[in-house]
Amino acid sequence: MAAPVVRFLERRGYRTYRDPDGKDYLDLVARRGEELGLVELKLSAARTVLGQALRRRGWGDWVAVALDGRRAAERALAASPSGHSERVGVLAVLGEEVEELRPAAPVHGAGCFHPFPELRARLVLLLDAVDSGELPAGIGWGALWRSDSGGRHAGREWRIEELAPPSESD
Image (cartoon, rainbow, N blue to C red):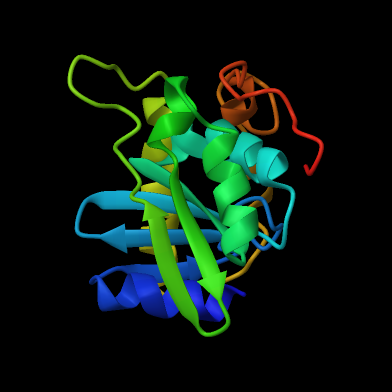
């Protein structure tokens, strides 16, 4: 499912990194100049993937979810009616094609502060090291990945209370 999303992003001028940490914490990272985006991939489970995207939004400038098929992607749209989740982009993977149902919006817009600037800065440094060949792609970043707050991933400290309650089909 990643290949069509990679092509979709690359057509828009992004360099992509699949599983850049080697631990499957970040599914796909997209970088274009200074802009950094994250895409979470799931076959289904719209609420789960939205929660993952929201927890990881501290690492980049925007987040999106890509789900297998239009129905799964539409469930993600329905589960994110307001709050931070309405900024999460929603992509439907339709075989080898990708349809953007909702574009990703910057998670830290005008008047917003970035609560974890060290996360984004650390990710940029690590991607720079991959690009320069200092770090092999897909290597486990281990201790380099730990947050300043002491947790394994400070991004998990984000709250996701804005998600809609699960529906019968989730």
